Image (cartoon, rainbow, N blue to C red; front, side, top):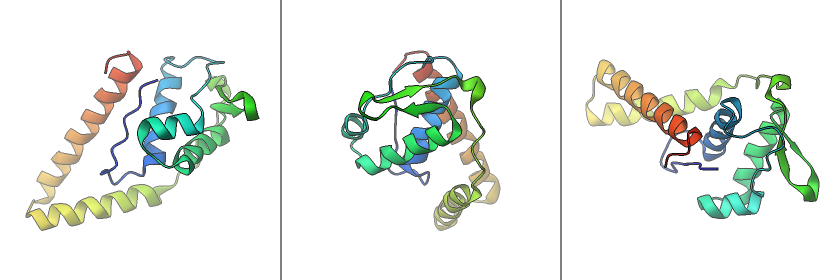
Length: 136
């Protein structure tokens, strides 16, 4: 499983992990029954605190995409039975505020800032697609 967390991003690391694992499950790159790395292992691989990975795993479990089996690890469940996560616009609002402030400091116009967001979003989608197809 290849994940890429950008610690300089306004998107919290746990949300990046959650979104990428969700994409891997929904595209079939992770199949039902596949075991996710342990929290400690993934945290170490990504250079993050274990609590960050644990939060991502908790949120994935709350949506029904994975199930925690205690000492037996966390496994992928049938995505057909998954529940959509409850929308939480606060993360997006925080990220937008941080970005807007940075764009304003750089002297960018609103159109330039929006175009930058489009490019970043397309880049993120390409990275997720590459990860699901096994490309680094």
